Image (cartoon, rainbow, N blue to C red):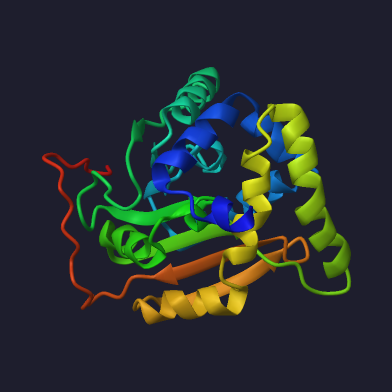
Length: 251
């Protein structure tokens, strides 16, 4: 069953998130015991510390990361799941924020190259059908010197690792099934986390694609990790072509 879950293609993952969009925020709070709010605050502080003024939030979902950024930061949010974006738009309107949200595939973003000071991805990168291609696409939209920030689940470590690991493997499928009515979605979560690179491997991947000042730190005993890396002023990686007729300028 685990192999079947991990073999899902982007269209299946899109449909799965669409089915749980109505309970997504509630489940995030419940399953993380509220820690997800603190994780996004850590991501927001990293973005602010980078001095970024134009941010693209990829896999924005219901726009929690976009809304966690200060109002002085110009942010666009994109996601490939329309039901998630619809809920995000309602939250943006309710908070009287100006956060444009639009549909887009992380592997082929309709965004001009070099137009963002920072790109953020929270709990979405492990769902990329092609991790290397997805990272190259995220870096493509960064200006020289811009920052990529990734917030993602990780493997627990330290004295509480056995307990946290048990929680991650056991509780989300059961509680997620009960609250969302979708048994598949929250079985996919621990399976996808277990297959994602460790903290050390992921920082190595970011360095291998050419990012500078790469960092990675664990949050809440390693349940999540926050990564950062800066695009060099001189970028020698090949530019990936994206078949879109019009691109969005992040300004």
